[in-house]
Length: 118
Image (tube, helix red, strand yellow):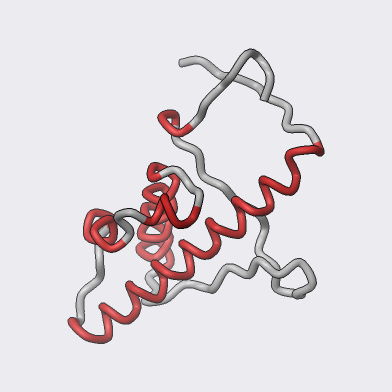
């Protein structure tokens, strides 16, 4: 197993904030979708089932498809862990007191490393 340490500089801050905001949007969409499906059919959606609903989202959200899958997998895992039908919304507004911590899941396939500098 290889571990790679990278330093992300301040010039990338705006891009990372935008990506974190879009991750929060996907989280909220999937959270709402799962809750509505539970109310209608009485069963939980799996990460595999959710993938059908998020197909093509990467073009709209500027996120890698693997990142969207990681978000859905995390939501399903946390929903099972905490035994909740619906999890808390993730807030992207910087001025809000309930602002969620920026979070962007990366999978190995989705990371590109170019010319030794990121």
